[in-house]
Length: 232
Image 1 (cartoon, helix red, strand yellow):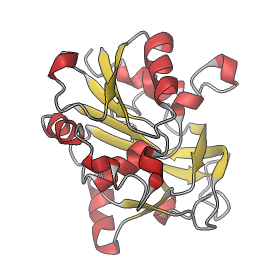
Image 2 (spheres, rainbow, N blue to C red):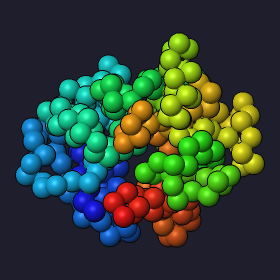
Image 3 (cartoon, rainbow, N blue to C red):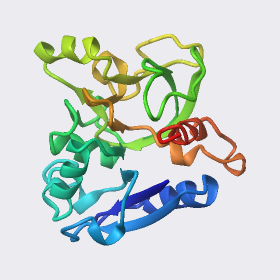
Image 4 (cartoon, helix red, strand yellow):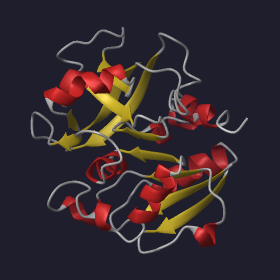
């Protein structure tokens, strides 16, 4: 499998993602600079990842400027043609701003930057990034964001559930949806969603920071393992 990792001004998790995809998982990986206007030079890609960071300094809104980068029309085209696109943290914000995912990421409820391990309850086990997670397994994966509070208008919430687009919800270590476990105040504890076609994914937690024994946490590795089955 071959993945492209898009690099924006202010991206700071691109090397982490390249390392996990390439060194840990053994996939072919290329970096794609945001000013590229075509994906053609990179050959056939199985997936595109928008990594975490602070694209364009998070001015205006997180991801609001990056969604106008030269490469984004190509990312949209790739997604609309069924290609796998995965946005993590800032990448999730960009995908929402670009209209590839529903909802928006607002400032955390306490208006503070949060960097800590959180627990996740998996809602949909039948997607390209969740199929390796055992049903009922609670994941521990770190977050690092100031604008991670997921919001979607109430009149769109039912469609989100009906189409099985919710991927993860913040919970406690026992899988309970407590007020304390909803660390950023996200609507219905939502930590990650996908599009209706189940080929575009976004999440605030960082699985690439929990994908190796050396890091003391391998829960995130399960999401990368799932990718192995995409073209099997």
